[in-house]
Image (cartoon, rainbow, N blue to C red):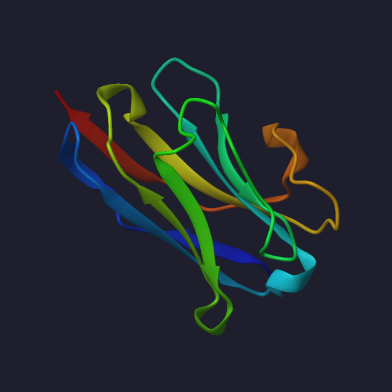
Length: 125
């Protein structure tokens, strides 16, 4: 049974940084694409960053490119989202997702079978 648990959210001032861990159980990273999505109030869930099963290839939404970094620590079964230079428009609930695929991570929520419960990130101006 796959379970994903996010943490690390909170309130931060614009320009600050946060690091979100996603602890994964019941899966092997070498067989899964891992992603981060976010959902702001009144908006659809949107792709933020993704990593394919190799852990080498990463992908980012244009809005976060150069500011956010996705990484993983296989020994700790954890995927991270490092968020720097945060902006008020980054305020959202951030979700970790997983899909058993050897291809490029999809950019739509329906591409993913497994989700965590989400963690709130609030960026004040």
